[in-house]
Amino acid sequence: MRLIIIYFSLFTSLFALDITAKYSVEYGIFGHVGTTQTRTFVDSDNRYKVDLHVQTVGLANFMSGGREEWFLSIGAVNEKGIFVPEVFEKIVKQRVSSINGFDSKWVDEKVTQRYTFAHDTKIVMLEETKEHDATVIHKASKRADYYAPYDILSLFLNFPKLLPSLDLKEPVV
Image (cartoon, rainbow, N blue to C red; front, top):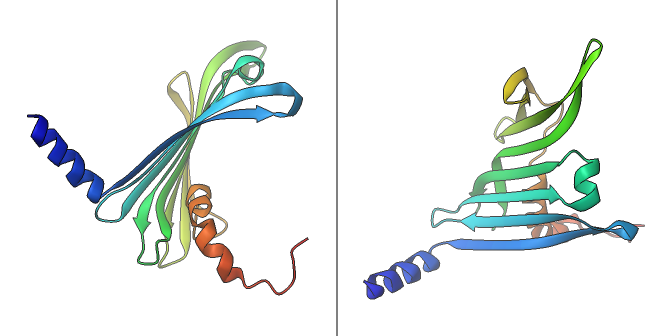
């Protein structure tokens, strides 16, 4: 049994990349305000998935209503090693005050924004869903006002490869 596990571990490690990291978020005089966990996975078919989870702590957690954010990028890695996104998703959860007429109460709010990339037609579609206490109160879908070839996570991963192609003649100030 032990030999099967060793072979499986070696086989999967030869054909996949899986990196996980945890970070502490600090901000000036406020000190430690949050934590971040990130995972980058690339399989043997050059399909990738990057997810990032950010969570506030301490006073920042109290002041932000327990704010948590998730970022997810799914796509393919091309022959040049560039991460090309197909779907990017951002989810924000926090406790907010909901005012309905003269009545106000605290609700758990979740806002999901899902961007779908069509690189061949240079179109990005946006689907947005807003929930209060797990009940959908708003749902919309539209074409984004712009086209961007990368989302924020793939841009971060691609930056070292994209920077030399900028061909800067003068320093950027």
